[in-house]
Length: 382
Ligand code: PLP
Image 1 (cartoon, rainbow, N blue to C red):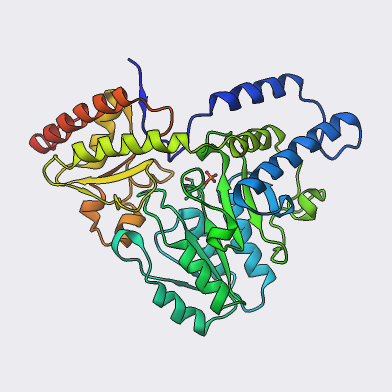
Image 2 (cartoon, protein in one colour):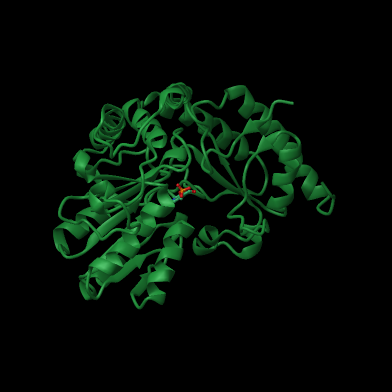
């Protein structure tokens, strides 16, 4: 049975051109980018070229790109770095952030920082006037906001937040978790006005274990990982050159074409699901990244549905799974106002450029049957 992968938001398959480039590279890879001989210089050039590709993509300077092991590290760098660098630091964020942000904030709070989580409203968005009021009281603030939510795909109005901070609160700084927005939304600095932006390779079809942090010139933060002077002495450790190469290629070859295909799939799913009784979208269909859809099916346990679908060859996800493997109600859906039961009736479907239209059609037929079946026989074992 051919399996259909509909969990791209968790990790996207490595793109074909990336696979080829990285395999070739690994066959011949020798050297350390810090060495001054030719082998080392070749590796250094790969890093410099990747920084240039990312800089062109996001309309920043190559010098403002710092490579890390992924978005979790990048987010920790910004949050912990801000706490360590800025005196009397204050943090503003939301309860609908990725756990990397919430856990890093908790750590800073434990170290003595002050944190305020703004409530989120419909589809997980903040009220910008609340942010305005809070910033007026706390000028030395890092505002950390997710651009496209990883569980729902819902988009926050980042450019308005960026303008507010830049025009009215010059002492405050904006960090955007753009991990799920990159590749789908315009993340250029001139559009979003960020000071820091974080992203991850494996959500983009590059390798796992590579990510980046953009720090605007003049807003550099102290490092999280101390070592041999790499990344301008701010992130020690020999660079993950294969990962960097993969990310550079994705940034260079970024194309609008994949968006159109994914938009078509999104529409197909949306139209079919709208016809299922008592199905409701937790995704704002008008204002979300098109590769993620989050849906609640009333009276259907999402864990049971996900397991049934898996058995039948379709990989989707429920809310956040904790490390013990138990399924918790998603903190994002709870923050948006769903109750625990509704949150546990919700699944996330995510897809990408490689997902075929006929796979989606087959999946939808199976989904409709399984929702119906679980409503009739809720206690049936998988
Ligand atoms: N932020 C968001 C919005 C994400 O979706 C993820 C990954 O799920 C992360 C951060 C963490 O990314 P990484 O797996 O690269 O550490």
